[in-house]
Image (cartoon, rainbow, N blue to C red; front, side):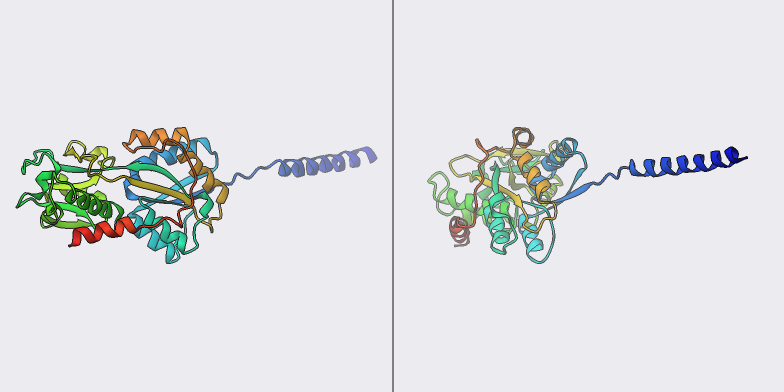
Length: 293
């Protein structure tokens, strides 16, 4: 009788130990979500970059907030949160830095771009060169000067006005043909593709695959073109600082640079960190003044 009582007790004890042991072996998987605020000209490229980064970093997901760099900078300064900020120009990166929101040692250039003209595929205004944008009656759509590509456009027109090929009145003549200014460069592409404008000025890398059959791209000569420089860095308040830095590192790595190159961006010959707080935006301001006069 004693043995019969002992066996159930022992079995119960063994079951209890097994349950505790199994509970101790349970694993909990955690994931990190990185929020990247990026210039809208990076949309297609960064979507691929994010997928590649996620595939190589288990447990880390990337979400994007694409908009004009000026809009993103304003959002961040007004209390918006993100882990990484990628700007299409220096001025907006500086604005966020000056607000004390960037980890300045993480800020680096990662890509370069140039401007180009786009026209509808049928090209009803018969535009074949930059000079044609000054012809009377041309309907031109450009980005607003508050947006990096819009400011680069003003710089380019100012350079052309100082070039004897185009003449001192070139910028004024072109600006008189502007029928609309947009807050995002993608809106310029859409309006030109729909035939609402005879031409638009965008980034050389900008035309998405969905619109490549709807517009033609016309090159702007290097003698008057401008080099758009892109900056990226980690927000100082990022709760995922290491993963955010890893994303920045991936963007500037050979793999990340290859993706950028595939979308028409020019890549830096070397990945070199640089703190941008001391760099002046005087050239941009003088170009705006030159076009306005």
